[in-house]
Length: 126
Image 1 (cartoon, helix red, strand yellow):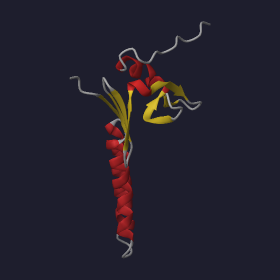
Image 2: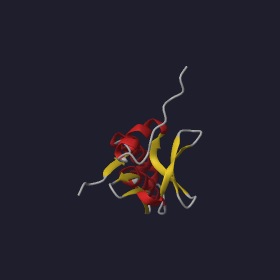
Image 3: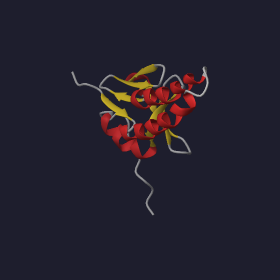
Image 4: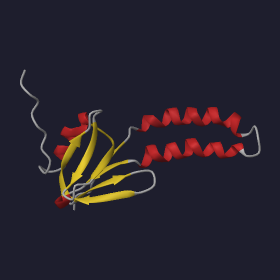
């Protein structure tokens, strides 16, 4: 069985998270309640490592910071490109699921990984 393709945010995004943590440290120890502020860079780092899309032979799994949603290929009607370039998975039930960290430029890659289930339209001739 083929393992799913894991599409995640580039790990270089952890560099600014590290800088954020470094900047929060002096503030985090200025008062008894402020160490809670260290949870902010931790949550952002977990989001960078976890959020993404797994495209497998039988389903698309969308992962976020706190959960995941699995959509079988039989329930996928297509992909909608939002005006800002975000990709949304459209289901046969009429619901939409945002594909985190995916943009319109990633559509050919998603189509290739879908095994022919999703087609990329040709750009209009000029």
